[in-house]
Image 1 (cartoon, rainbow, N blue to C red):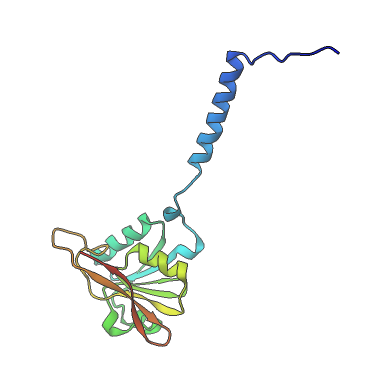
Image 2: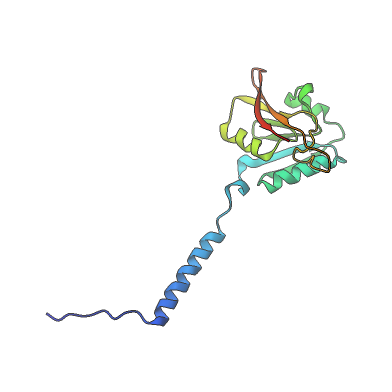
Amino acid sequence: MKRVQNSPPSAKTRRTILFAGAGIIAAAAASVTPAWATRSANKKVRVYKTPTCGCCSAWVKHLTAAGFDTQIVDRPDLTPIRARFGAPEDLRSCHLAIIGRYIVEGHVPAASINKLLSEAPDASGIFVPGMPPGSPGMEGPHDSQPYDVILLRKNGKREVFDRYDA
């Protein structure tokens, strides 16, 4: 029986294999998008705001940077929109958004919206009443203040959904 001995690959062959492998790995890594930046159907947001509100535009930029697909609808008066979607007066802020089946009112952080979509509670939506300094879109030279994100259940009950410190 004659034995055939495999000869070791040449340096040129090893380089070719290494470069091909590195190219495959680089291509795969380039196609990976971080989870927080993925745009999907459930991350489409319609934002109702007044045309001149700068903090609303800053909040939209916050959502876009977090991977939400935003559509802006400028209206001179948001009262009819809020009434249509059932946003309580005492939880109102300067803008209202609709994402899926939920109302998102005010300067709600993207992390809270992601949590809402992930947990999918039986609720009307989440709210940050007023315009708390330091909330998304309200950053600036002033001191930040702690604030709560309020969950409004379908039965009208309210609870703290998230709490943000200053």
